[in-house]
Image (cartoon, rainbow, N blue to C red; front, side, top):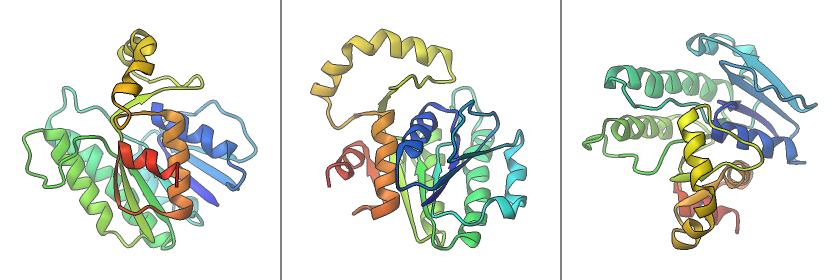
Length: 222
């Protein structure tokens, strides 16, 4: 299986990349992002593109993939809706539309978030935009498309967030994670579980196309 991975330097993307490189069924992974991962591996090819809006023009770099793991995203904090939508919806769809034409047999997995609003009419700006993005992706002619909606994600194996305040938060809450997992087993996932679940769904599919945290965990036990 050949995988295209967007956002491999983000917290989720780092975890997904690790699991991809460990998976014996995966032949090659091509990462695309604004910065290099710093990882060296025989399976890994990297494309560093500062302006990702230009990436869809390179068709030769987008063909021949069985799955795409789209972990690219930005925080909505301090952003106007139009700016957030341009990145979250506009860039994602520009890339996904091109991929669906070049790889009709592709499975596309998009990392969304818990609380995403599929009606596109809720009070929270980020949830509306994420919902619109999910709905548009599900209409594209991929072999299959799945929306992952994780809640709290625990970084493992040296994975770190690009946002310093998040790293401080994770360091402070680390001793409490076992308690949180016991009390809220369907809300907390690890970066390892996210990566493994994406690989399982890419290979075997899932019973539903929108997967909340409990559904993401469930595919690991099927």
